[in-house]
Picture 1 (tube, rainbow, N blue to C red):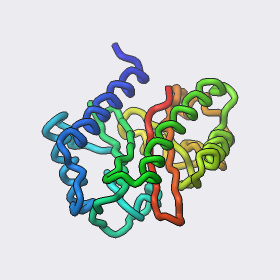
Picture 2 (cartoon, helix red, strand yellow):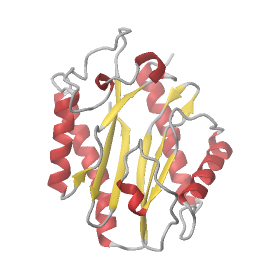
Picture 3 (spheres, rainbow, N blue to C red):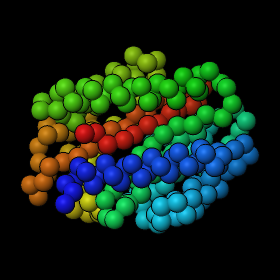
Picture 4 (cartoon, rainbow, N blue to C red):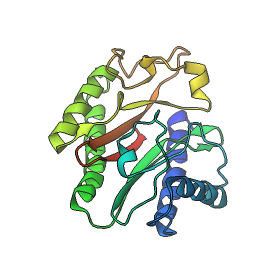
Length: 225
């Protein structure tokens, strides 16, 4: 019987398969709306993996909308010939949640390409930091580290938190929306602490770097382990 981590990793692996298929099918194209691309991603997920259930709203954002954090609902934009696009998907596989995000670039804009590379590299740095400090790390200290990480790469951090709990669906109904369930500057609990039900906790780590002057943002998220 698989343990919680194995189930979460398996769910994430299936989500990554979906992202690979999005690129292989050439779905990210100029002139398409965010809404249309979002619908096509949903249809591809049904076709490829039988996914119909998501534990949070599916996000596809392009252009200036990539500045917006998760809770915003900006107007629908059309993808441009030179553009940056990010995805934030929370598919559910056999009642296990995944939460994965990645950034794609249309065209050859060097700043956009740098941003895509930076969010992925920074996430790996954050993973290494988490692994080295997991017994003493709080949500607040991890958020502060991530803000500094953004500055080191030459960006601003784009959200009020840098991650959250993930688990068996629907974890939000069981654990709530308190800040102790987020990698938030007001969460001073150790991340290694167990939840209120006595279970080991597992975290999604989010990198959202932005440049407000050029109105672009990049996003990357995966499971910490």
